[in-house]
Image 1 (tube, rainbow, N blue to C red):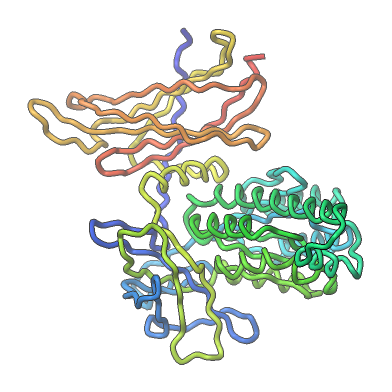
Image 2 (cartoon, rainbow, N blue to C red):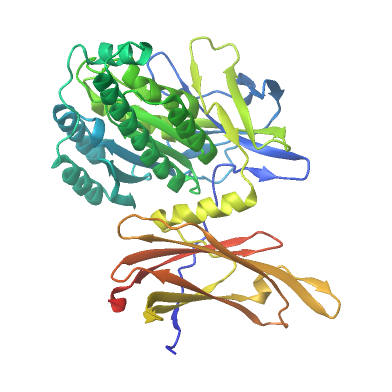
Length: 473
């Protein structure tokens, strides 16, 4: 048997600056993020808690905590409060399936200028492309050089949307509304609908990957709409974004109104229901991109009391005595269970590689090897019992520990989250260990993300490491 190779993970504590969802026995505190803009589309500063009225499921909700975020920095009105930074997370989703080559070239030029001059240096940004399958072009990073290289790589591939024809939108509307249409026309409409549905599924994957990240999270879709998008597919996308706490914004790089309202409806709905925005008919895309960044880094956070019995709530935020201002927020927000929160954070860190180790966990990795004709690897976690919550039971001390893990391969294929949980009865000062074996594909490279949870306190360490299964070939 090969010796375990210790791989001590870096110790970093990541405290969310924004109020996260808190639980108690009787009530939940639900964080509501609201962006406020004036007639010029610019974020509005200087509002107070008294300027806002919040309803949850149609009933007035008490605002228990309030602060403003300006360019990523928290302002709670107390000059004595140490400066806090709320991280901004953005994923740029380039939809090649619905981009004409000329419009795409226009968008790539604007993205390049945006990364060079307009990108918030504190923001973590990633770039993915979609052409029928999802490709992570640039994992989450603050490195402008990597982002510029990613934009250049995407720009080399032309968009796939055919040239628009004047009657195209009218034709699609006719197909949608009429029953007296030749079958081959309906085949075209079904193909467009399927492409749009598959695109929304790819977008949903990206949204879910961001769910466990701290801070303000935004997906920016660069595309020219989703023709014949099915309502149920749109509703599923919106629900995924709302449950994940991710705002969906969209940028249409067309020079004119080439794509009609029918193609834009799905993205318009997603933006309106998740607190994002749809930007269209603008020649100055740089200014449009800057406005998305401003919305992601300048907003108001309101913690409100919500019934604990429900999982998701209809949220309505209004402004008192400010008819000239517009407020946007997610139309529905959920309070995830502890299990859902840990799992989503675990999955998100496959991409962000953010480590957090309050339990002082050590991880040892057995390199991939062939066993029984299969490629397998193993990892062992070692947790000092002094870091775990233990209760006296009889003559001993009892606790609980859960180990969750998921892997991401070099083809961007992500596994399900696997969980093993057990009772522990450690002796005084003992180190609690758990070994897990995982199956791998030979010749692939993986990221392993592990979450180790104290079952009583729910305090969790999140650690990641890389695995190369080349030895299994």
